[in-house]
Length: 317
Picture (cartoon, rainbow, N blue to C red):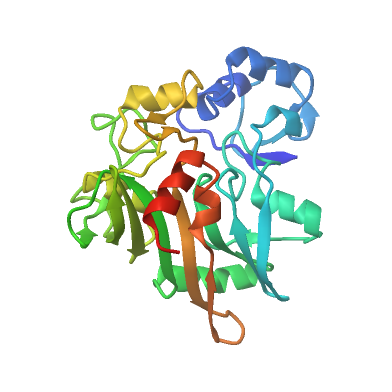
């Protein structure tokens, strides 16, 4: 069961008004139905849509898995000990609870299938980003690893397919990033380069560039939200399959509402951003030993026949 504590701001708010404002992925009518059937409770009690919320009210939602979008449940465990878990993630599953996803998350599926009593995501990969992911098995260990990531100790290498052919062998982007304002975009999750943002640095190295695509090896020197995607758009080579960056706002909303699929000339429909976490190096939180794990982008990118053909033709494997 999903639950969270409500905080009242300046005005009184009904339960249904809060749900519609905070979780717009579902209509008012559907939220009303969930409240009336008892799927949504306040302080563990069934209530009505017009119930006025107070600070510290606990809202719980017993949502069936069938109401969540389908995900790809494939994963591969690369390393396991009593403290940490290193997993190879696919490109169609969120790591942890967010928005429309609660049960259909990698953390929850690992708990169900492998029997882990608790797991904590240490760093972020977007739902559509595949590759190496570090997970802690205890809260204290997660805190220690969080300090490493905050201090930029781990080394992270990615591979991505970019739209367009890079002319330079490498491009270092050293531009601050912040969440966009209402004037910059109506999509509030979009990040933009802005002098008022947080310091952000990304290095793009060209592996090969052919037929209006570039395979790039990417190293990040900071860990901002959507950093690679935002910086790739900034240099004029957005990620292939990215529905948010390199698109107009209205295009993103059409993709989000499933009115159409993102399609690219010569390569057809690409349903996910082709970004892969290829390598992660960090210090073990107990022993201090440096550990490094790799994951090949080829298998994940090759789910799209046109991309498999491009890789097989242009990449020396």
